[in-house]
Length: 128
Image 1 (tube, rainbow, N blue to C red):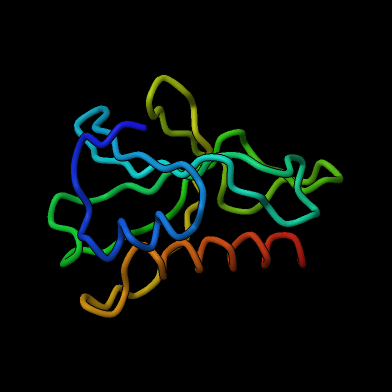
Image 2 (image 1 turned 135 degrees about the vertical axis):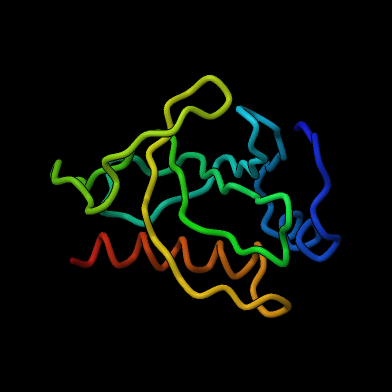
């Protein structure tokens, strides 16, 4: 797995504890955290896949925002998920952007809290 830029030590420890492959890459002038082989909740068209998170240069002072999925997700019945129509090229693939936002609190939020929120966004999409 590539490590083209470092994350804060506590983020790397948390990612290692997840037990899924992850990498940090630079692509298109942006920094990305890629998580691979994540298991998704039932109710989606794919049981697993990858999630990308854009890491701003001033992270962790500047917050994380949104999530990007590959492969693209819909509900298992084929219905689309709101605010997921935009695509973002990352590492040679077109990723599906989930436009989701929250108030970032430096020193409180980090990669681990963002991953928890991503899971909640998936849960909300499946349960609606």
